[in-house]
Amino acid sequence: MIMRHVILWTSFVLPLAGCAGTQNGHLFNMKTGQASTLQMGSPQYSNGNVKGSLPDGSTCEGQFSSVSVENAKSVSSVSPMLTENSVASVALMNCGAGRVLKCTLARREWEQFSYGECQDQQGTSYSLIF
Image 1 (cartoon, rainbow, N blue to C red):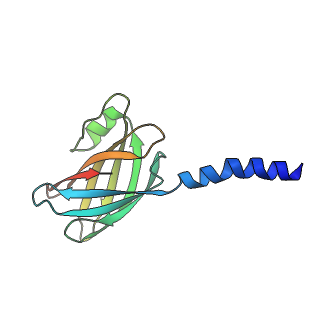
Image 2 (cartoon, rainbow, N blue to C red):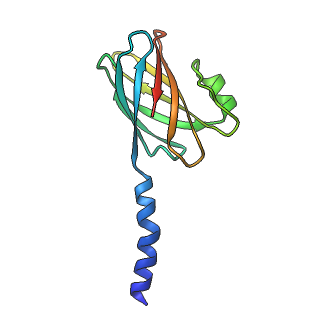
Image 3 (cartoon, rainbow, N blue to C red):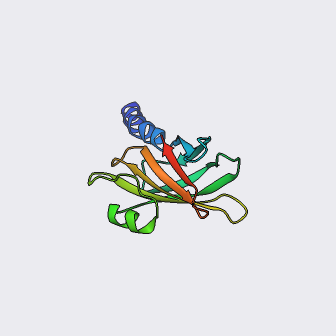
């Protein structure tokens, strides 16, 4: 009986533990074509941490949160194509020396991110592909 409970418990808990992972995306500077990597923590959830770097080497850290598609379009100056069945998220990252990167991201419900668009406060545009 105890063994049965252990098997049931592990068959439920272990798959959930694997869901709380990370997802890497490639961030491309749209003027220079340079690329870097961003890592999203717990991408299938409504919020999580983001860390990585800009293509020029500046280190970035921040967070993302899910928002409605309408709010994503009004909160951020960058907006990738967001369909009615998209889950939109906005990420804000501090990239050192007063530099902030703001991204709008798209994914499907309970899935990882697909793509995104970003911009820093100097107006440099980036595309983010996962």
